[in-house]
Image (cartoon, rainbow, N blue to C red; front, side):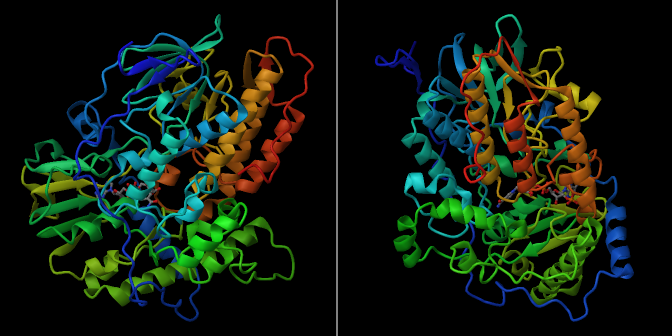
Length: 636
Ligand code: NAP
């Protein structure tokens, strides 16, 4: 078998040793600095009388229309495939190919997979195997290790299983490096490493009807069989490049932020970064500290909210471990704060349960209609955006740069960002904002970027151009009962799932955190928790029924797709801009994230688990005691 695959003599089961070593000690960093200047950590008040009137609505519309059709991305294929190489680990550990069978095969080794493994273990499922493209656990936190990386959801609510692990993060917004280390500790503690095949990319997952198994083929020559396959490979997994003329001719160093090349020393270099989304907002202040010249090529400004990073206090370290379920309760309270604005003053008291509400709820004289509710939300939203825009003016000294940094769209329409050092960075003499609105960078040559007839000569070019949203890179390689791939099914019928977890014709396939999957929440750990528990319920139900497979009915799937579309359309005015959330303005309503809210998703889940009508089990159904549906309280 070799050293990488051994047999555990007590169980007779295979144990894997495929975790790769870290490629270099240079791969290290920290996230948000603690900023003590209160003027940088507080939003200015909204201007008096700020109202989302016809003039302002027109300005938002013009901002959007100018950018219509500008987004143009491409996959990292052919000569661009090198941008996908794993720069974080030593080469893959050599091992034999596998052609055996397991009960549950999970694709991914990030938060979703780690959480799922913990829940499966608790439920007594042990014949579980994981396939992971990277050389170690962490998923997002494995691939994204750029300078400045941190989580925008407060860590006390974001990191899973904090009580079980007896852990409290060191700061409110942990750095990506701290989160990665936490993932590694979880994996060690839960015996995850023994079960994971690292540097193993699943290439084909094909349903075999006669055997009732999925045949899973990988780039390591494996052809494994599994009763159940779970996709836990993330929602922003596949990096994408902007398609720009001449990009292949650039002679300097270049890489994508999700494969940060620490062998390229930025000290004293002329560096360009394309894109100003959540990633660039974290990268820019960090690299500005070392480079000689920094050019930030922006098409659309992000909304830069306050961060207000702080260290965990001695009191918190001392008291939290004695409060039962402190982290779970906190995560539930956190879910009530919209768009993750948990840095705002007073929120800590609410999150820790010291006060009952995080803001005074406005009492309306009568119940508002959904449309009136949206109008009220748009007005509140406008005032927040006015504060965000005032903040730019109050920090950035050059008026032209400040004007370009101001976003005109609803808060949350594009992914909100949070930083207390990003805006001041543009006051530094060696940092230059290059406003490429509305079309973006269109030309690169061997020396650098060309825009509006000006050539920006660069030593290093960094693509902060993001990821495919709700694209795991695997929907096109999973072939179900009808011989179609998931991608083919969704391209012809529109995205069709039940609860975002099942898709008809793909029996025993469970999708965590996929399209329509009850997401639409800023804290994805909460979604992963509920999906992991649901997967365990589905497996237990199949077992209890002595069934072979679980699938869903066409009616259930059609009705759910219609519901997702309606929820999307209802709240669409709040997302009326060009954003990856709406497929850069091209997605069919209801085809990507779920916009019904966590509560509605729960109600649908509970109703389905009680009625059982959406599900189809093949093989004779035997009268048995079924596992009860998850309680609402244990759903997350
Ligand atoms: P992103 O939000 O998709 O940003 C891509 C950027 O590239 C956008 O600013 C886009 O401009 C720009 N762009 C594309 N083509 C361009 C061109 N030709 N010229 C100029 N600019 C161009 O990607 P991201 O920043 O990597 O973030 C992705 C997601 O990852 C985030 O939204 C978030 O969900 C997650 N993330 C989370 C954290 C965290 O929790 N701390 C940190 C980083 C990322 P337009 O806006 O005009 O399209």
